[in-house]
Image (cartoon, rainbow, N blue to C red; front, top):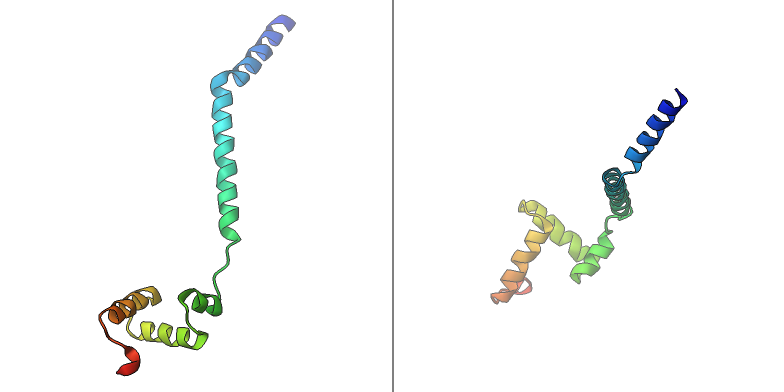
Length: 98
């Protein structure tokens, strides 16, 4: 009886430690770890403040707010509005001279 139980236990241990199970567990744990690290990295990013966004576009905060409000009035995102403004300035239009 003891011999049969010990054989079953040894066979179970062998099955657990056999290469397909080890590889499957390694891949699963690696995927889980990388997923958790990715989620943790995304959670630490905070949105930019208006001052940071204005600096990113090379504007003052007041000018940034005006452009943002103008984009909202036209039903556009700020980025779309800035692209159209850059397109207008390349065509020779100057908003300050209108």
